[in-house]
Length: 379
Length: 118
Image (cartoon, rainbow over all chains, first blue to last red):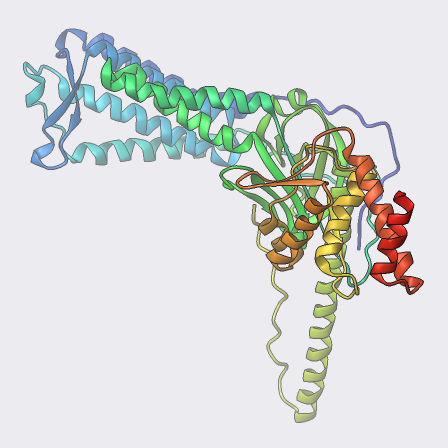
């Protein structure tokens, strides 16, 4: 096994630059779309009916069957663009920059075309949005995607992962756990955060109460609150209390209540595991499920975390008590899995060798050799 | 909590699982009030039958080390006494093993225990 051993050295605190370049380029299309949205509203203010036709029947030639006050439409459109923009900016990656542009193009195009179809309408009920509009919107989105794709070239590629970076085999010791030949071992531990649970519960509560207000009082702000509340609260609640398990199948993180979404890293995808200190705010900008280039983490607090280095060089972190035992068992089980793989591979090689020999005897061409399967990435 | 079992051992798997929990509680790696993994999950994890795990949990419950509640799963009994109790039970198991090794029948062992209690 070729594990990189590096002399213990004072670990420099890695500074996480927020990669303004990608972020700025991800935010730009939304700023642009928001500008266009507001500009169109200002330019066409005198020519637009109030309320606007905002919902159209699929059949019936796309006739309007839903209406929103002009001010509401302006606020909602802006809010939508800001929310989408914030999301894309937060999770901006070089490889998916085009997605941000496509999203902005789609949302901005849709808002603009709805306004255009409302132009000079005396009765909003007469407004029609033909299905062709959607092809136009799709076209705008596609063009925006191409623009985003072209802009990707401006961003320098993310630095390759080096084994010398902090994390497993970054100079820290790789713990092992002695295990008998026939012994089966598993490690399991529940962990979570009361703060996260409480916060998510507030969101879920808001998401549950808001629809009632949406029906009783007025639809708009409350329907949005319901949507945001449930969209943030439910996954938040699911991930605020989890069970971390290490066994013959690898590392598994399962939400305690819903059992979904589950994170699993199989043994053959694990290079090494260790325990390291993690500063949630400095490294990941907060707590909860977090992603950064080449690393992802489920953080309930700052401090000791189980750190797993994967075959593709990526790191996965989870803050869990007694991580040392988990890391040790994970290393032992991963080594065992590799041994089994190597054995079966050498078996296969000897098989192939004898095959070849018999073939040589028969003076036939070499048989087709099958490459050992590449372990698929699963998480 | 670390579970390690050896299917080749003469000790029943359920007892091995119970010993893991007892040991963890006795040496402080598991704390009072901690929730044990659901039996089904642990069974899948170790590749053993659910009933084997449940037998182990049942045993721990009889020893007063865990509480089994419907819907809440298995929880180590809360309270500062739990680790000491786990140590006591561990010593008792060692004693039983020693008695068996010496060829004492269960009845003889119980008589001895009763005499010890006075």
